[in-house]
Image (cartoon, rainbow, N blue to C red):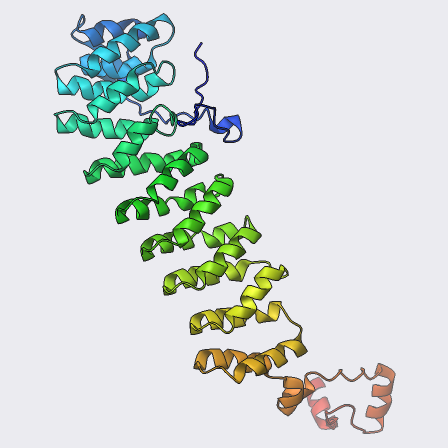
Length: 399
């Protein structure tokens, strides 16, 4: 029985603790096909060419399986056959026929789950294969195994992320995106290094993955967001700023600190993300409260407007009106002034008669017996006149 794979820090060799074991044993989804119907005892003879073909039934249809199908089926072997299948797979990965090599790459991820020996060395070689289809298959293979074998693929992934061929780099970043879910701390190490690159493409792509490590990356992820917010490239900062609101739902204190920085950014999109973060912060927290109050005097009117709208959460009615009147003395933007004026308006004092009356306590209800006595004497009750009864009309109704 194979041992559980343990990811290790490539610098120290020590096991990396990334949380519950259930995330460590995650397996890739397996593509299905007729080759899965080949009996195990027929897989190796067919994969080595001892058998030319083999007929199977799959999904109520008959299929004629060939050597290429059997190589894919090496991934379903178990027991002693799996050991022999592993050796055959290594031979296939170095076969002169590119189609054989592609088929071998298809089987590699599943075989590696039980017997990874040497497979990743072969994979790194095939990424530079002379045949374009083999290179493409190798990139897809790497994307599949990175989330499960982060240590074994660490150096290969690092190289492919920075590869000048866009297709290879994109495939590698896709694998890194999946790694964010299975081994977030390992992914943070890759993102950390990428954020220090000169390439805008690498920094922007890395910043785009920050949301994926936010949930499980812990303090390392928070640091990465903070560093990305200080990047000289505005798009990198925008990607980092998009993490602030999700972070506010998890870590109020950290989100507040980072929002303080982002709200002063020269880019309006970064500021807008910071504002959205402020809107969900717990304003009972002193630092968040100070951030809102300071934002009401920000040089950007959009920031001022957003912070002004949060003021009712911080203050009672009387204090709010006084604060808004003070801000109105300096405010020049029409939208912000309108918002402040609405908050400063006291309907009980400055409103119309109808608005003022709305604050008066309702008159007590006239007891029914008093109403009947008053009506019998022809008097008005409340604000309504008693309509005179017309006996003739009454006779007509009953007539």
